[in-house]
Length: 272
Image 1 (cartoon, helix red, strand yellow):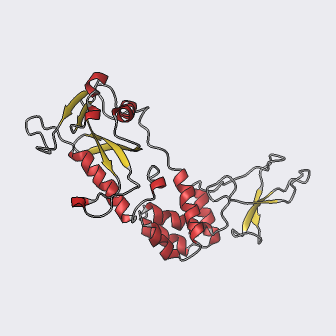
Image 2 (tube, helix red, strand yellow):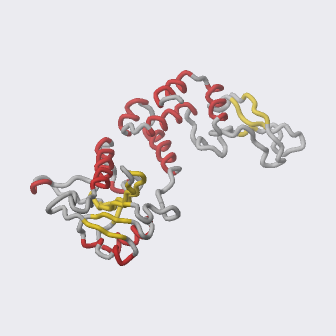
Image 3 (cartoon, one colour):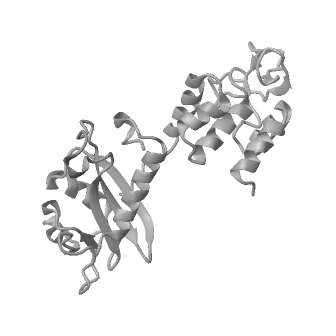
């Protein structure tokens, strides 16, 4: 399997025909297309009036679309883009390897709005994380829960407190490390906000470890085995082993990713 860097170089070397063949072989482009009027299969023919150099063409003489050309990008991710197919793929490769947006813009040095359009369209394809049909935890399985602020804090009363504060709740399933994780931006840390999220994502009879935040006080009443650690005195309860270190590690990863991107706009943090 090619590394992202090798794949990027491959698309640089490939000509248009090779790029189209490659994308068709992985079903990123349709390998065949029927005419929308006569329902006959169209032929892939040369076409000089578009970026791709080829197009689908209906050759059924009795059809209203006889000898009309149709883009190979129809019904694909590439539809409504006029940029080279290889360029679009290379932008996505850079984004998937977690390169910062400003770095991607600086690397390609082309129309910024085009790169943003590609990335934003790709982000719409990423499914929303939801474990309601296959919940985290289960009988005897440990789930750690904690809430955190995604942006910076003013330390020692120095600096400005952020007006765009964003809190999130994170839930991680632990079996010798993090197995699955869930995070959601929350408007506040009240029990009326947190408990519905927990019950929708965590299976009944799970073992839940949290800190002593008052909003978690009713978890035992909701069918969970709830244990707490008091962070005022310790980070690990050395009698019971209860801790929230895994979920705090997950929070650290989230914040590191935000820092790498030089921040995430407030309106985009839910998507992040």
